[in-house]
Amino acid sequence: HAIPGAFLAVQARRGDPLARFLLHGAAGAERYQVIEAIRQQGRLVRTPFLWVSADHELCREVLRDNRFGAVDTTTSGLPKPLTALIARADPGLPNPVEPPSMLMVDPPEHTRYRRLVAHSFTPRAIDRLGDRVTELTTRLLDTFDSDQQVDLLPAFAEQLPVAVIAEILGLPTDARPSLLDCGHRAAPLLDVGISWTTYRRAIEGLRNLDDYLRDHFDQVRHGESTDTPFSRLALDGTLTHRELAANAALLIGAGFETTVNLIGNGIVTLLDHPEQLARLHDDPGLWPNAIEEILRYDPPVQRMVRIARHDIEIAGHQIAANDTVMLLPAGANRDPRVFTDPDRFDITRPNAADHLAFGSGVHACIGAALARVEGVTALRALFSTFPALHLAIPPEKRELVTLNGYRRLQANLGAKE
Ligand code: HEM
Image 1 (spheres, rainbow, N blue to C red):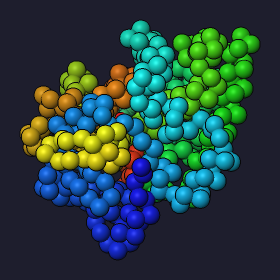
Image 2: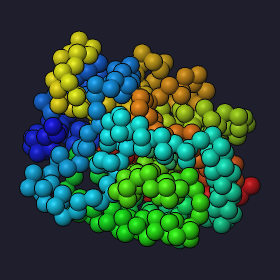
Image 3: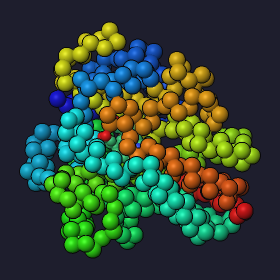
């Protein structure tokens, strides 16, 4: 039922470019060369390991087809005895990439969790969070001075999304550093065939998070915590601790590891295209579309994986039950059948928002509207406060495959407006 991680590793070591890409990803131009090679082979490509698609229509179709289900790719890369050991050592850790995280279960179980969590994402909730985002952004930028040298990743991009997640869960401000730490440790869990050391670090992060959440939910039950739609789930007993904690861990992981990358990738892409940044200065009304174009051009999530629940015929191919399909948003987002001149970054692109950066179908990102608010607010405020902002050294990418973003963005802020 799993992606044969060990087989992939052998092929990658032998120099197979596709295996290397599936296992390790690829940076910059190389990433798009491999994606184009996949596209040249067809809309859905069979490899010795799994099916893969860079085709917009097909990716969307698979994501919206309930004959495909969610699948955990992490432990499938580890040798079986280790997975068994982990399962015995840590039953019930709130793992965002294992059931009962909503991301990893199919309807009808999925529908139940999604409905409960959706109370935190109503238009009214997003409006209220939007006000907090503006307030936090202003406060953050107030701490920076003209010509300051700063790593914008930890000092800026990470701060907002993690504060917002803490608000949603009703966690106190002092929780933010430990949320960040758990998120960073757990992020590689989305990748295929990670090392045992990385896996252990991730599990330790989740154990810390579980301890923390247990205390927090206890406080909520004793009326000692902020009242939020999410914390109310702890009160009414609709969900078990494990269900509550797994979905809280998912919100933490999905909610900030991605949005940090939207902000970080946005900074780099806009600095690479100064003429587009100048247009945003002249017409700030272009910001919402610019955020869509950033999501299309350099998506924070690079792959989604599904498993066939039945034998399925799609796009002229026979997919056998239990076969795995990997969908590449970075490929779909540069599909020339949907986006004219797809490699061009253009903040006025009329259909920029047709990207698949937030997925599609039942698992489509529940936080998309919130992420858009965070992206527009953070980037608009940063570039209008520091219009001469520039990077001091070339940016460094994080060594992750599924999540796509920077580790370091050392910048000189220039004069403050
Ligand atoms: C699901 C991307 C921000 C919470 C997803 C999926 C994608 C995605 C691609 C679908 C995964 C799949 O189908 O396998 C992003 C990006 C973001 C972002 C690119 C920022 C730019 C957020 C935020 C939150 C959030 C801010 C919450 C505060 C979730 C949750 C799911 C999800 C809970 C699972 C939904 C389900 O399974 O029904 N996200 N996300 N995301 N996202 Fe986001």
